[in-house]
Image (cartoon, rainbow, N blue to C red; front, side, top):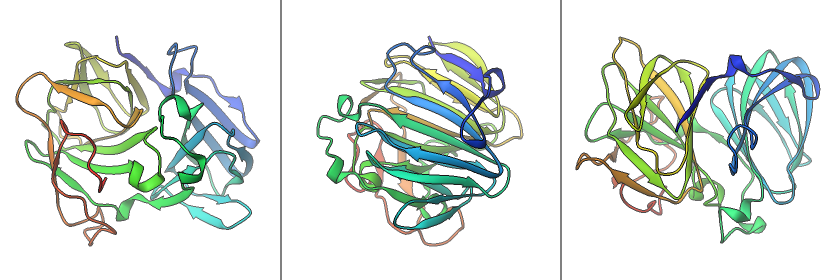
Length: 277
């Protein structure tokens, strides 16, 4: 059954200088998980030393505030326009320029979920997701932006996407075989269903779906709902309860209303991940 909780229910612990960590997804909470999810809170002037284990990859996203990520090659100013992907063994320093919140995901022992994994093929990268293509659902008003894919980062261990639900929008009931799936709600309120059992969703909620659980979400208010969802591994099979299979088409724009940095062709969610994703 789905595990649903809010970040406010999880205790903070010190993590670096003037920084704190909330362990949202752990092996203790979701036994056997291949995903570790933390919420990091950085105060202005905070310093956090990051060293990715030699068998792991890391993805993090600024959801509030501004920070700086620096390694021995370069320094990057980060805002909530950015996600960062770190390869095995990567070292650097994360500094809070103001009060900042990040989602921090680690895939430990990445070879367990990507049999073709090679540290040499994984690309450390800082990505401005606001310049990535926006895709429109062909059945409803939802929008999708990919934020972690094999094309972007060089591993099939993880797939991540931002999903936007306008008011009065419902997704299709479906389940995933061969992958863990979890969501983090960035804004808005909605109702989620897991094996037809409803649960409320609001900002800061984490929803963990084990492989094989039927689920979908709907919005009923005047509020837009935005969440980030993750799949580990990033290749899996999706099964639909009806013939209303989610299909996604290019808009030719990014969220800025400009031409995106790349193009993604029309594709259906019942297909294997296309090469351009």
